[in-house]
Image (cartoon, rainbow over the protein chains, first blue to last red):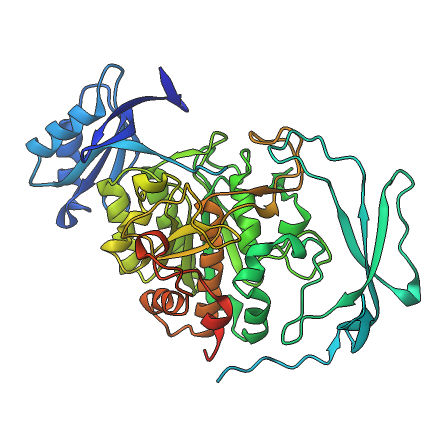
Length: 103
Length: 391
């Protein structure tokens, strides 16, 4: 199993392209009008699997980062959350890796 | 109007004509350069192990500087030559920085008369050389190099444990005219180093997002324009896209590498240049101005810059890609081309602070020298002199 820090790395398709993603990290962006709404934030967090922790709270762009419990897969959770909370959620995605590749 | 600042003295000394190898050369009266070339190549675990070379300058009136007793090899002494229209910096490895010569950096420097305080450049990479909480590299030791956040070790300074960030930062902004190492293209203004890439040179799109927001806040507080240098690449994700949309909305310019996937295409965030005019996507060429085989191609490529065998700073302690801890080395990739474009953006913006990010990007593109196919080269290779002329 590949790791990034203490995150689990998997390969999957993002927008049809092969990508390395963090299976236990979920990135959620709230829609603009809900960014500062604590009720909307809580509703989104309530939808996440039990055992989910806040890795970084919603920033000024409305992006929050969550650590999913063991066994969860961020691609699947992201898809479900986006469907269930379409009113509040701009998007939900797995955290993905960026690489510098020099020679 | 194009006009170079006329230089009749250098460091208070007259410029005179001297015959060197039978040819008249403008030199600085009384100043000589010396180069000591050891016989043995360095064995520091470098991929491109090379003969170490120490070069410096001395004043004839004070005599030849002492040479270490353990030194071996040839000593070469020459009059210190001047580039008419521009003064070559006294950084002893400047002659190895072919990229600066190809984009006419020294002529651009002579044309610059901006205010460096007007611009901040954020280098979002693997960090800079730091030891005991202090800048540890002599060419990256100025206070204008500011510690940004370390996203891998919160609360710690952005220490480079890989080497990539140090190399990029040196290309962009190593101290110039300090008789040490190399010259950075943008050697005047504030550089904030954010660490998003770890010892394996890997980060995430979420770290990219956080670093950009931090840089935007820093620049706003400083009352300065913001140029962001980013070499990482990943897939097209909503977070990367939203991040570049945000920096555009806040007036910043992102200079991003095209990535090293060659004909497989361009990575992101550089790939957003097709939909976001605050993004310049940079490809890489070699000294023959041919595309580096690994340089990403496609409609997103905005411009190209020298990116093959680029000599720059390196952490002066052991890191992932160099256990020996050499202070300088050569590297290749679009990562090495990108900081030249970011530095040029700083030069332009510091001289014309009323420009928008889009106007800075446009200036760089329209003054580039065409090399042919846009999918490979975009608008062409950047030309620092042309970009600064008439500003």
